[in-house]
Length: 340
Length: 276
Image (cartoon, rainbow over all chains, first blue to last red; front, side, top):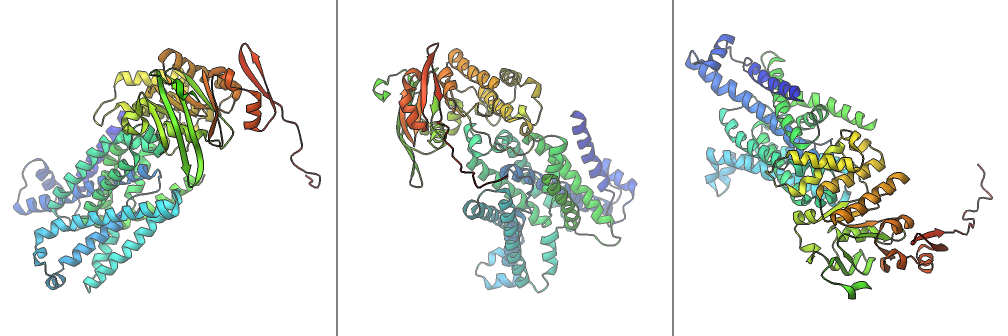
């Protein structure tokens, strides 16, 4: 067991450091080592290293952590191993919130509205994740209502409700983007597939506290999260208010997803795949699961980001294409495994 | 019925409890009382309201009337406070993800843990002892959902032991067990009552097992309580014949009533035009 944890930690460090050596700008291995352990040689190198390379690795890692722990939590809450923020509609909800914010802050639109104050950069940087959070909460609530009212509590229904909400909100947000900008295609691709290409250093400082607080909460609620696996009635007889806990946990998932989607777009299947692997390899109890997801999710994302940068010379592949390609294969395998 | 004999010693008081679900009467004006350290068997045909009664007692269903435990209404306990007082072994539900037996038993600690409290050596010992008490020591690390029905049932009883609540409610705790473990489990519950003063309420199908291991019995029929008291007084042939719709005889063996149903052996199916 200890060996497995040590391996995971080693993997996380190794991938993160390796990732520093890849990027569009020419930066020799020796100057990177120098930047890492001492001072950078030139100001340009320092700029590239600390403003582009390092933030990108950090944000990539954080995105992986956030998606994986959100996925693990969603899976425990819904008692269903085939769900993640993407399939559950949370990503689409966050995307919708973010597109509405983008629309409101669009210069042309803003001039028509009475509240010009919203056009400032600073207001936008607060409003974007906030709107994404509201959108994510809306999606979660919608799925819950659909499942509770019309469809019953079967696993298949939950999945269908999630996928339906995902498509619906996705369509709305793409339409909004299409209306707002004549050249919306770029933005739609961004929300659909996600990308780490435009990462800036301050993204990490916004994401870090949100992800860290969520992580601490999830670890604290670990025992309760386990009890949810027994079903609501059993959880209740063990002193867990299942309904309230579910609300709290879904809100945490919404916050995690929103801060990721706001800055890096919709990245799918990480939250499905990583918890699955961790459960099989490390164990199913929540605290083990979540810590495992932190290490493996972060490492996985950093590796995928390296692939995104080196697979094609001269241009980057949106990272979501790679995660979806790997993830959909994985999804297929998971369904097959379930069937047998 | 016994309500007039209520006193301070009565720990579980059920007074005029009714439950309706969508205009259907599930429980109709049920009242009884139970002393601390007693084992109560709830008997009755399928659909008589046994499970519903147990859910009301464990605070899992809304109801009309009053249920008090230790002089406090069940509905006035907070969820966590109730979980320290009442342990529940429900009929088996499906288990997702491969939790091991140990994980499931360990969840019995939850009512006693705050968000920040740590898992201690004493906790481990408690879990180990509970698993030992139900004879599953060699299966500790096995996946819960791959255990046999009887083993799962015993694991849930072990979880209730870890939970350490003074009121233990079990829904048909022996229906998945073979004869040996039926007796083993019921004796264990009886020991809990006698040695640790735990109050046990359980539904049972086997009337003779109930007569053997329970101090008190109640019989439900169509949501109504039709009899309650000690096995000797409750198990009357006329009543049982009426409730279970089968002729029966009751004889005393070592002063414990033994009930024998004698179905008339009438053919139920007309298979004369059916061929295999």
